[in-house]
Image (tube, rainbow, N blue to C red; front, side):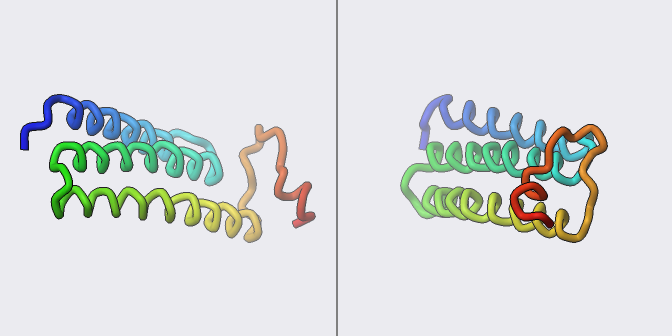
Length: 110
């Protein structure tokens, strides 16, 4: 199916966000900042790639699978990131020394 340039633009933007998220995983100072990069950039990038696949292929089996995968990523990525950050905090993984505030510790006393 020929759907023009729009799917390629969506996929390119998605790859850019995935690349920025991967660089963030390498460059950011602690586990909590790395989870931010992974959750926000990679979730957006992956969903844009999958929406680009949907636009390119249309409403056939591949397009519907791409849409379902995007919904799954939107649902599980923030949940998994939250669980990892909470577990790391409870286990005592320290924040970066230049972190300004620890709202979880203030709110819960953990």
